[in-house]
Length: 358
Image 1 (tube, rainbow, N blue to C red):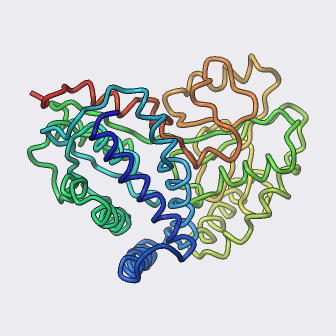
Image 2 (image 1 turned 30 degrees about the vertical axis):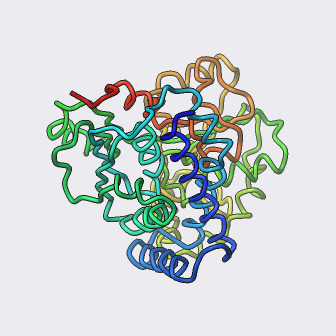
């Protein structure tokens, strides 16, 4: 193992331990703990969709699923990573739909040996700098390789995540550079009818975690012909407390008013509404349902939308879409190898060259 890889694994695994300690109110010096509480408080005050619960959910997933030493070692063992830090910088334009959604891109940029120039979303401007400050306490060399910028200037490659409307802007500004441009995607689920109560509860978390705002959030569920949709109600009712959050409650009321105005049938599942629709992307507060009669019909419903799907939560992977499929409860907890849009970010960065980009 190269010295750089050893330093990387040590630094980020220690960051994971610090995050776990923070979540348990242990293991951090008072100053660092106060700094991170301050970042959480600022995030909650600045963005009505960020709650302490959702921030803790994001931190727990990062620490457990990305920053354990074993996971980092297994991930990097798949690649020929550099023996030392390299010249060149990667510009990262981060989304802000859920807390710390761009953390994996930063992991990849630093794993490739490059510096990272990060343009934060105004919706999530406090949490990542707080994590990088913790990283600086562990190993100052890595913190010196991260810069938070207002504009990307002088970078050698770009990773940009945004909406479909932002994609033409990315192409215009950065299309001449090596790049990964990400557009809007969504998550769906497929149930067979044989799911346990626990699996349905995990599905509810896949759908309503982060209020359904993530690109991996399940906004539509394919159910077999004859399945009673009310079987979903106990699981989704376990998240009924989400409707105490004013912005989300407002979305649910608005969605219900529209459904009633258009005389569309709907179910109140407790944590959200549900309505049958052929559309793929549902509004906040609504879960779309669609029936299927066979595995072949299901495949025909999903394959045409492959480029719009981030993940498929299911216990039975759909033929032709296996890489997109994840177990129930894992849609909102991507692994290090669950690359956004199915594009291997780290491989892209490593293929740019070994001694510099040019």
